[in-house]
Image (cartoon, rainbow, N blue to C red):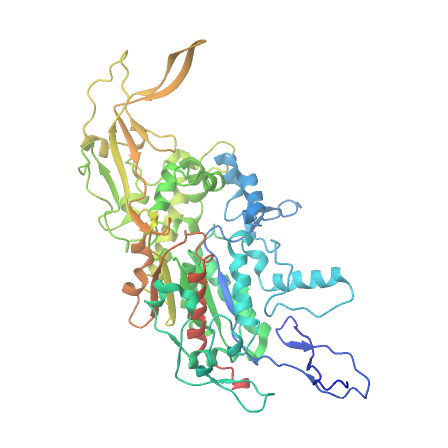
Length: 593
């Protein structure tokens, strides 16, 4: 029987060059093979998406000194089970002095050589070459050109890969699997060579949002999808020195935005920013810089600490051991570990509660759980808590600025950094890009610190050496730093001392060290809901704080912790939803209008 089947259509493979321009490759065929070769042309207009990570989410390396080569000091490459195992090994057990000497904002810079994917996805496609090694290297180069090597693989790459695939694997809305369009949404032409078009004005549910978010959001419209389909949306990443002032990071982000727009040329007028945590503060400041509000089509904020987070205070006082032993090994087990880095880092200090955070978030309770001092701050956390030197409950224990083998800092250096934090808070205050979308964590299973409470409890007495009359709660509240024994962990101790008792055991007597005191001051655990780091009050602040109309949509979400905010499908789909809404209103480049 003769073969009467229609010949399969032939499509020329496409890749992109460094400017994002499509490149087609095809080997000429014999003249008798005259069926057409189809070049599927992507949209001309380009609307890049730039991801801005949170604190500790960018890779850092040392600044070369005395002819020495730079070396990675904070590299978030994924290891066993996708965790940053090498980072854990690098910092586990490292003393405060070494942390201070290495993790100094002036001694580190962004490391762009972190791990990047080794597979093609979306628009990250390189031309075919003869050597597999060359092809692999070309792919790595393309990801690094996009900034993916600057941000943590373990925290962010799965999301970035998903986003690149969702935005750029197809530019034909009826092929987008997230929407499962039905015949009612499509006008199908009689000519099979023409693609279906979306009917205008119809609602399109995005099932991946989940029921909780679907209840909070209006459905997308087919018009939104059609408008978004007019753009290629390559995904970039922006790493920054999170130890330095976020104002510096904002200026560097503005430079990156201009660089990306130049790279793509006249086809690119604007970018969209997607932020995680502190990256949202960087983006808000960037949008205030000259020309940036117009260069940014919109911003999607995830779990942003809008007014700061009291947990930043707590970690300076007692470290991270009670929150997470694994995280503590990297960030700091004790208050000494955290303070050594925190106090010299304006970026970290800018996560402290601002003056807009609810007053009275720092409390002392007596043994009957009654207030033992006025809740603080009354109005100004900078003067009332962060810059105080005369109370044990102030933020900083001054001797921790000079750990053994560190790079000693002076109080004036720390005070200057607090002033930088205050200035940064005042600059961004109620400022948001006029096309802002926000989601925040509001999960009872992810408790967060809405307040910090020091709870007085009776200490362990010494029967052999009576301690005398214990000071009352009011006296405790007014004690100096030197009057409270503090090893950078909870509890702190009032009165007494560390003693050695000999406890009977089978083989004789065992020497046991223990604290004897009038009072133990316990820093209580989480008292609110959120994402484990940012409390709900700070996360939900943008809608109430922003000027009318700036925050277009704000939703609460559950089912994730702070670090994993982009690892669950509902928040990924909220990001996709927001990007489509922003793209529908973005400026069309004049050359492709």
